[in-house]
Length: 234
Ligand SMILES: O=C(CO)[C@H](O)[C@H](O)COP(=O)(O)O
Ligand SMILES: [Fe+2]
Image 1 (cartoon, rainbow, N blue to C red):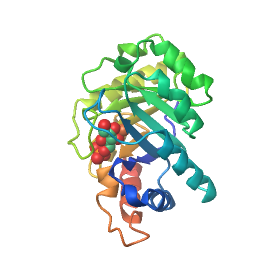
Image 2 (image 1 turned 30 degrees about the vertical axis):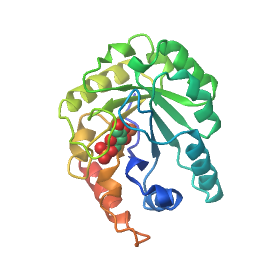
Image 3 (image 1 turned 45 degrees about the vertical axis):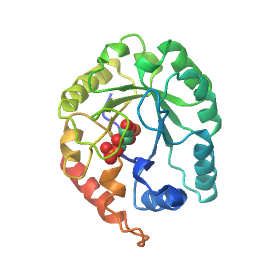
């Protein structure tokens, strides 16, 4: 299966939550493709962020503003299953979870698909891709973490590039349309190298929102253009 089109996925973890709708609208209008929505529970990871209520508000706002980008919910929660329906009802398009956080990975995937969402597994820097062995036919996305989960603004762990290459081989061998996403420390400076390793979906939080001047409605144009230009080189 050929690599899918490149998607830039701003992580709203680094947005201004006091004006979340506006930040999302402006970054999508600048050319971003997906809204990456980080859910942290202060249990699976040592940080606490946002839940289905915020997802629903954001989805409703996006519908009102005719913004059609998918919402990509990255669950960093344990247990996983109880919140799947809540996020599906709140408008999630993709729901990904960490296999270590689920007692029954196949059941969690079934719950996500049964709720009408696309499903994916997330791999921490030290988590083996072997969790994929029996579920390749049930997933739509593989997310490789290039930082340990829990915080934005961390440095990219280079070993993630080897993991991307290995995941790309598995996807190509499966012949399935599975997106390969990276998350953590992605910036305009390293996005081409990440793409060359086989990635097609690029989460970036501080690399996008950290660069902006809050007063300027076109504040994300330059960084998104720069990322696209780098991707064109890969
Ligand atoms: O899942 C995450 C952290 O667990 C975030 O999506 C990620 O850290 C994005 O932030 P940055 O691009 O600043 O590293
Ligand atoms: Fe994330």
